[in-house]
Length: 404
Image (cartoon, rainbow, N blue to C red):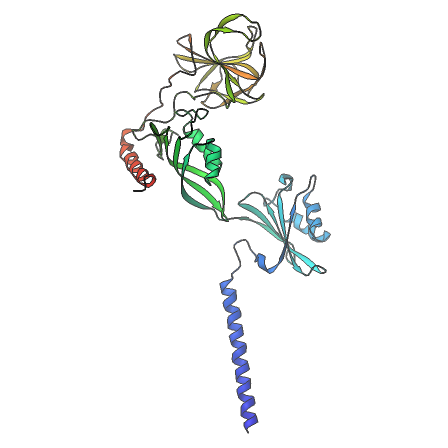
């Protein structure tokens, strides 16, 4: 009798244990749901490949272990989801396998188009594919940088993305000479960045920046959105537009090789004569942009030593000239309308020139003036009805950077 009772309780204990194990298994499944990408990577072994030169999608799939007949099926499923002609050399491909090294099967292949978009190929059982976009977070960040080397170097040293330097250069293009930054200049910046899987992939925009020159004068840039009738977004605390009628310079240059002068010895002819422009030394082919909005009044070869020259009339007062160009951008001809910052040509060494550079000239009311000392008026100021919004934003950001 005791043996029967013992067997009964043993059976009950086993059943309870089994139920508990099944319950734990269900709980584990609930705790580890299938990720949004469509499968659990931890269930498989992973190998990473890169697309080779001249490698087609069929060759790639065969190389990572997909049977030939399955490759044919996958190719019929591409539709608009995946364009094999846009595959790039060096793009990452992750292959997920089941089984051991001697008897493994390719289950999934993941092709990375970018840091956020991938195509998933299901390579076993039902064969099909889908695109997956990784979630992107938008995070506000603050960085405080004192210039010691360059804006780019000092920002990256402080842990900010390199793209932030480009954003700041664009915002302050009309008001700050980035080739004249000095040690001790300060940039206090609040910006929004895109983060994917813990990695910063882009800078969304700059919300606010206070630039202080060597501890004295300062310029603030405040982002004000949704102003009808304009694309301008950045204004200082007084509502003045940070965009000017003209850019500070028409290209990214390495140095000023010759300044405006009424008596200069020409480097080719040796004659003493006026040089009513500024020479910007820059590599051959460097893009040259229009200093401001305007109309091209001439674009072609000149016989007076300027080589390929473009002239742009901006308004009734100002005209600009771009000399010694290697060539013109598409669509640049007499009568063409251009926008500020639009590429119009490329640095060359045509005409009487000793090397690649841009000879840049400005005329005011028909008379040449020094481009380096020209004062450019600001574009349209912030509409008065937006001033309360600007004041609110300014006070908010200033309290943040001051640590209030």
